[in-house]
Length: 98
Picture 1 (cartoon, rainbow, N blue to C red):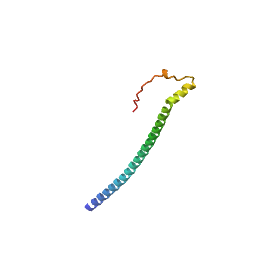
Picture 2: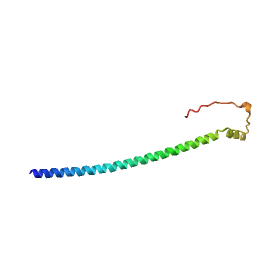
Picture 3: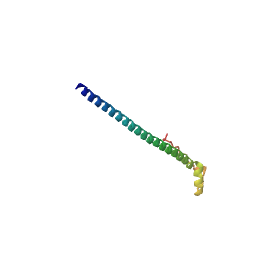
Picture 4: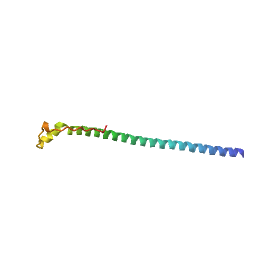
């Protein structure tokens, strides 16, 4: 009788061990796929950030070109305005973006 109980206990222990190993492998595969998916999302977000940063830089350069004195003078002249040194007023503007 003890031998029979021992055989049942060994079979149960073996089955539990096999189940735990299968569960461990399945969990590891699942977590690896979650990690890969998360890494892809992170890479996509980083690429989008880099693209938006380059667009912002390009817009900043374009803004600097558009507000340049030569550009303003050209547009003013095209609209019939004339630049006179005596009528120029200087304005100091602080850039708080930095």
